[in-house]
Image (cartoon, rainbow, N blue to C red; front, side):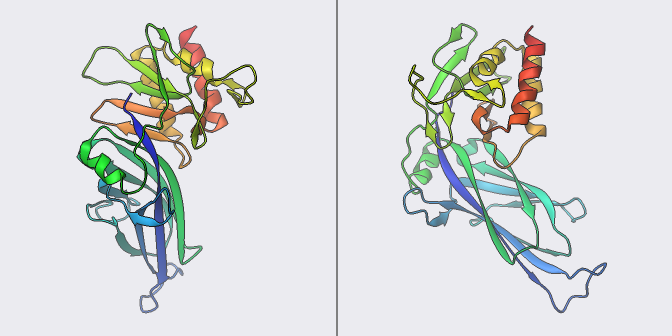
Length: 266
């Protein structure tokens, strides 16, 4: 598993009505902008998001050239239009360390608004680690243990599905996390439950190790199709890894995954 640390990024949106531009279909035309910053772990202040190499904004298809690439901090995009819409934002880490896709709701309810997202940032690239150090400690917070074809070590919850073409077969790696802090090994007196929405997280992660490669692809697709901003999902392209933090998934998706895994492992 690629070691990683958690960071918080902030997506900032600003919009204003353009009084000199005629309305469209009765709606005022607005100038809007989106930019991305990083939050310092200690001071909680905004700092430049220099951990990213580039950002791609996937605008509504009615825009000309809807996929806009920005390579300079604060990765700001400026546009104008009369209606809001949901869009995806792809952020790419330095040194091709991977990328994430984040959903963002562009709306005109307020002139300015901010949305914070907790992400996992890989720490296997030297330049990326250097930039990460500007925002806080760079220590592996994934608390990983390994599940492979040979058995289970530790208590699973944070799943990595590896579908790399670089090697034959697939593997699943896992660790245990809940919220912002890694969990300690469960004991008889532990108050931490591994049951969410009626799904035993340990059994789910273990069962995933029994899936064949095609069925693992199905798991990845289910997660992508149901992606929400709260979910911690990392696509490490160069490493051929798709990282899923099970504890960040909504209960409905967990139930669907459990039914899918049971069906394909019975």
